[in-house]
Amino acid sequence: MGKEYLIHLNRLALGQLLDALSNRSEAWQKTADFLTTGHVADGTFICEEHNYANEAEAITSHFSKITAQIEPQVAQQGDYR
Image (cartoon, rainbow, N blue to C red):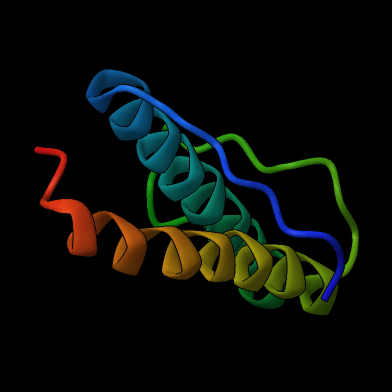
Protein backbone atom coordinates (compact mmCIF):
# COMPACT_ATOMS: atom_id res chain seq x y z
CA MET A 1 0.00 0.00 0.00
CA GLY A 2 1.22 3.49 -0.79
CA LYS A 3 1.28 6.66 1.25
CA GLU A 4 -1.78 7.24 3.44
CA TYR A 5 -3.55 10.58 3.77
CA LEU A 6 -5.58 12.14 6.53
CA ILE A 7 -8.49 14.05 5.03
CA HIS A 8 -10.95 16.18 6.97
CA LEU A 9 -14.49 16.43 5.58
CA ASN A 10 -17.67 17.81 7.03
CA ARG A 11 -20.70 15.54 7.40
CA LEU A 12 -22.32 16.57 4.14
CA ALA A 13 -19.14 16.11 2.08
CA LEU A 14 -18.52 12.69 3.66
CA GLY A 15 -22.04 11.57 2.83
CA GLN A 16 -21.66 12.75 -0.75
CA LEU A 17 -18.29 11.00 -1.07
CA LEU A 18 -19.66 7.67 0.17
CA ASP A 19 -22.75 8.04 -2.02
CA ALA A 20 -20.59 8.71 -5.08
CA LEU A 21 -18.39 5.69 -4.36
CA SER A 22 -21.48 3.53 -3.99
CA ASN A 23 -22.94 4.81 -7.27
CA ARG A 24 -19.72 4.24 -9.18
CA SER A 25 -19.37 0.74 -7.75
CA GLU A 26 -22.96 -0.07 -8.75
CA ALA A 27 -22.43 1.30 -12.27
CA TRP A 28 -19.35 -0.85 -12.77
CA GLN A 29 -21.07 -3.92 -11.32
CA LYS A 30 -23.96 -3.45 -13.75
CA THR A 31 -21.43 -3.03 -16.55
CA ALA A 32 -19.72 -6.29 -15.55
CA ASP A 33 -23.10 -8.02 -15.42
CA PHE A 34 -23.97 -6.70 -18.89
CA LEU A 35 -20.63 -7.76 -20.34
CA THR A 36 -21.11 -11.23 -18.86
CA THR A 37 -24.76 -11.83 -19.72
CA GLY A 38 -25.54 -9.37 -22.51
CA HIS A 39 -28.59 -8.20 -20.57
CA VAL A 40 -29.33 -5.14 -18.44
CA ALA A 41 -31.73 -5.61 -15.52
CA ASP A 42 -32.42 -1.88 -15.29
CA GLY A 43 -33.70 -0.41 -18.55
CA THR A 44 -32.40 3.05 -17.64
CA PHE A 45 -28.83 1.89 -17.04
CA ILE A 46 -26.09 3.19 -19.32
CA CYS A 47 -23.11 0.85 -19.57
CA GLU A 48 -19.63 2.16 -18.79
CA GLU A 49 -17.30 2.25 -21.77
CA HIS A 50 -15.43 -1.00 -21.31
CA ASN A 51 -15.08 -4.37 -23.04
CA TYR A 52 -13.97 -6.85 -20.39
CA ALA A 53 -16.19 -8.13 -17.57
CA ASN A 54 -13.27 -9.18 -15.36
CA GLU A 55 -11.76 -5.68 -15.49
CA ALA A 56 -15.15 -4.12 -14.73
CA GLU A 57 -15.41 -6.46 -11.73
CA ALA A 58 -11.95 -5.33 -10.59
CA ILE A 59 -13.03 -1.69 -10.78
CA THR A 60 -16.16 -2.54 -8.77
CA SER A 61 -13.98 -4.24 -6.18
CA HIS A 62 -11.65 -1.23 -6.00
CA PHE A 63 -14.52 1.17 -5.23
CA SER A 64 -15.89 -1.26 -2.63
CA LYS A 65 -12.49 -1.54 -0.92
CA ILE A 66 -12.23 2.25 -0.65
CA THR A 67 -15.66 2.39 0.97
CA ALA A 68 -14.71 -0.47 3.30
CA GLN A 69 -11.67 1.51 4.45
CA ILE A 70 -13.67 4.67 5.12
CA GLU A 71 -16.71 3.24 6.90
CA PRO A 72 -14.93 1.83 10.00
CA GLN A 73 -13.18 5.16 10.48
CA VAL A 74 -16.54 6.91 10.32
CA ALA A 75 -18.04 4.44 12.79
CA GLN A 76 -15.24 5.15 15.28
CA GLN A 77 -16.09 8.85 15.17
CA GLY A 78 -19.87 8.47 15.21
CA ASP A 79 -22.11 7.87 12.23
CA TYR A 80 -22.28 10.72 9.70
CA ARG A 81 -26.01 10.31 8.96
